[in-house]
Image 1: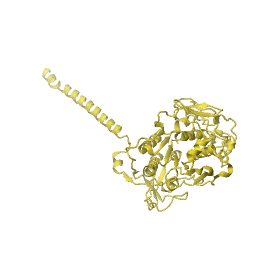
Image 2: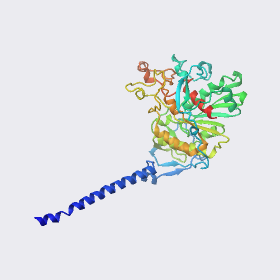
Image 3: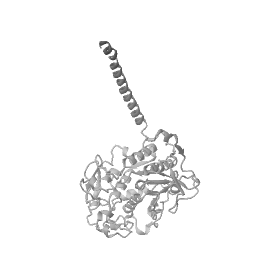
Image 4: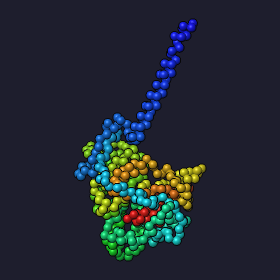
Length: 441
């Protein structure tokens, strides 16, 4: 019996040794994986990377036809893993982000100020949009007009209409983007028009490119409808509500031919990428076959094509380019008032929680945009409108705007169901975006 026991005894140290080796191997393997993830945060798998091809964007005369609202895809296939290839500007250039100055004017709070604000009256601006004229359409509480942005550690440059016109003398200021950027353009026109006599100013009819002219200063303030930056089937400023969103992910040429001669450009793009998958019709596609990609991925392609134009065409000594970050929405009141199930309807004061961030502002999208803008360095200045605007749940039109479609009885019985919690009343939040622009020009 003793001999048999002695023969089995040596097995225990071997099992313990094997167990220890297994634990060590597992730890080393996990650490190696973590290191690889940290070194390369791109979630694309190795197999997918092997199939990636790079496309040079914005090649003249590449596409056979211009996209419009009647364009369709003959077929749809999976995404082919094409990426946009664009060259970084000179590495010797510094970072061109306005939020890198000694004082961050985008970090601050809203201060009620009914002495200096609003900067103009809603009824005094003949170019006001019915979509944004909240008082005209029944909003009786005017507190949303009296809030002034106060940075924490410095002062925002005080708006001066004469000084702004001198900055614009002999120049073209152009806003390029979607309806939120159009709201900022209308705000700028309303801020500027009061000192120009009626016979010395004019506004062109609403079109893809709309132009406000001031003869005295030989200057224009323009808006170009380009909600996705690249060419798309939604480039009609009026008829753009379509079942499928189709873009040419590798070309901004159609739009850049209009914006390239502007002296100051203010771009935006965000909300249109949040409306589901996007169809990609590459410029070299001859059979009308589209690919389908999620909104974030499609936006990254479009930003690459736009960045290629900026990197290759913009001289910061001659042209100023700004990119406005995402404009937040306030669609769920439970995010700032837990336990409630409303939205921006009937909200009358800003959110006073420092650093509040709602679900309407997508962090992965912001990180992607920040990565692109960082590569452009001094070519682009960033207007970081997101955090200041996050606090302004009270600044949206909600039900106080013109609606072009007839509202149903069940909607009228529930105002929150048809409230616009995306756009902004004027005077209001977009005026501060333009104060930021004035501050940095």
